[in-house]
Image 1 (spheres, chains in turn red, green):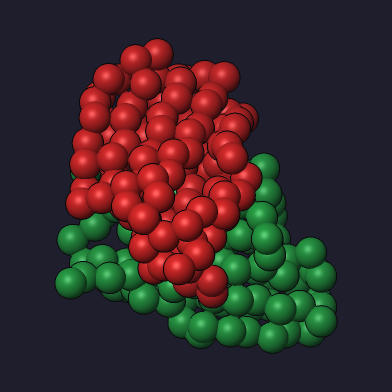
Image 2 (cartoon, each protein chain N blue to C red):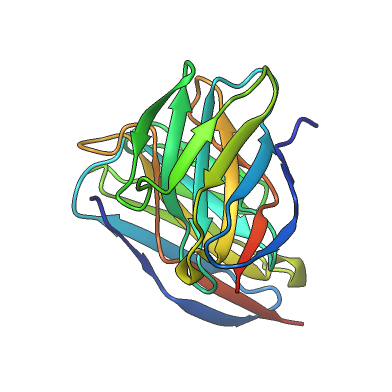
Length: 113
Length: 112
């Protein structure tokens, strides 16, 4: 199946700093989504991207769908303590995956006040 | 705001027993999914369901697993004979035509 490589695995930052994380795939996706997961909770959708090259913002979050359709990044500006959690990218559609979501390994974000 | 709800939140079962995990998807959604997440790992796709039938399933979704939409609101995942390695968080999700999947809070299944 399709594999997503997400980096970095973990980040430790100070409150107020900007954060960037990204995902790459060996094959194309039609849709990229970014989720945040708090401990013991389900993933919560942050941003969905539908077109290659698309840049979308949601408050302090900005995400882009790569031109090649094989990558995406998520930026968080001016981080705050409640940004702590695990961030997952997910790809949908493309060469083999249909409607299923293929998730990355996740980026564990820690924000120090 | 509409949400996906799952019950129970935590289930402990003996190895070899059958379990049924229940989900109520968002009411106007047509696509339903089950995913699982082993502790500390990524979320893995199990099965998708559309128009009252399985539309896609992963290699994890073997003959021990089945899904059902017994009425207009519930969507269930059954594991016939649980194994220790079935211990995980199981997430139900649903989506409309946009493809944006919304997840429930999960059921933590512990097989002992």
